[in-house]
Length: 269
Ligand code: NAD
Image 1 (cartoon, rainbow, N blue to C red):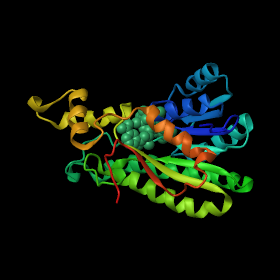
Image 2 (cartoon, rainbow, N blue to C red):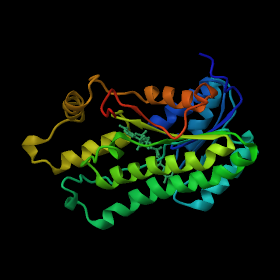
Image 3 (spheres, rainbow, N blue to C red):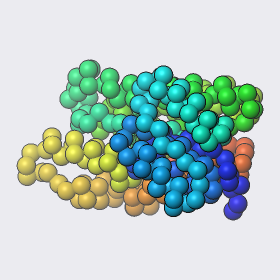
Image 4 (cartoon, protein in one colour):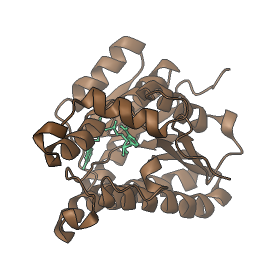
């Protein structure tokens, strides 16, 4: 299937690691120009590696998505260096780093950082890119949410609540921006081996008595067997394939949707 996004400009927030990096590689493999916005130290080398591997233009911009001014600057710098932004994939997010079952395990103050990054970061990104896309009457936005935002996951309540908010905001922006030819969707991974997923296990493991502590691999295997009908991890590339497809014109009639790439973890009816 030809996606026809060669020379398009794609922004990937959180693109220096995990799913975001796979998404950035997925766009570059299709010949798109890629900007990575991330606060990780390797943001510029991640972008430079893409450029040399796929022979496309890239830029890596050190950006904290919690800071509205930095996000606006990143949008301006991307347009200057690569051209007007066609696609945005917003992957950057954090967990609270604490095991939240029961929810009283966390203090209300433990929620703030997660909500600030996961909700306000999403708002900043949407505000920074919507107006230029409206002027050009085209564009796509994919928010990476999570199955945790759909099932009242008890593992990390601030994370789950923030991901539900992202789904809701994606629907709101999809309705607002549809008349301007802009599509917005949420993609929800299930279980993907990344630093963020490992952090969920770490927080759980630290709460267990020594005789019940498990390795990351054992913990994940049991969880996947219990909740994933297809019985496997998803890879970052599995998520990236869906995201790049959704960003292309092959998905021209898909907007406001919540698409789970989760091995059947969540099934709607
Ligand atoms: P990851 O930790 O590998 O990557 C997250 C990236 O976001 C990192 O590069 C980090 O530096 C960046 N980031 C964090 N805070 C930032 C900030 N304030 N400003 C800019 N960048 C920031 O995690 P991942 O697992 O690849 O997660 C990517 C997305 O997928 C997230 O939205 C996550 O919630 C979602 N997700 C992951 C899983 C999973 O199993 N890994 C499951 C469901 C959803």
